[in-house]
Amino acid sequence: MKNSKKPRRVFFEFKNPRYLRIVRDNAEVIARRMGFEEDQVFELAMVVDEAYANAVEHSGRLVELSSLEVEFLIYSNRLEVCVKDTGCGFDSTHLKIPRNLRSLESTRGRGLGLIKMLSDSFELSSTPGSGTIIRIIKYLSGQQRIKVA
Image (spheres, rainbow, N blue to C red):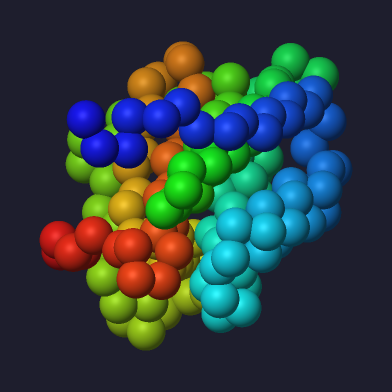
């Protein structure tokens, strides 16, 4: 089976949301060491930053009750990042993620659209009362699968 080798794993769990800089810096370091091009490093750092900031802002629980997890799975051809919060969650079945950020009248609400546009693959899973998980996949140049719209 292709790519069945277990990935290297880097995992962070925070009880305090002020560690955004640590998460972003680690995303950049990991991406550079993997051989991502500099524009891809920037994109990865931006989407990880946005996913983490969304988890902090929208988890809806008191900081002392919340937990934020960031997991980096390092494969030979891609980086997978999972940002998980233990917040209130939401019904994501009717969520509309904008395809064109210019169509929004506000600078607010662009986070998920930005994450989706800059990732090679993006998944969001949320359940009311159970928190939210955002999974982002970015392939190394030349290793990318065909992106399906």
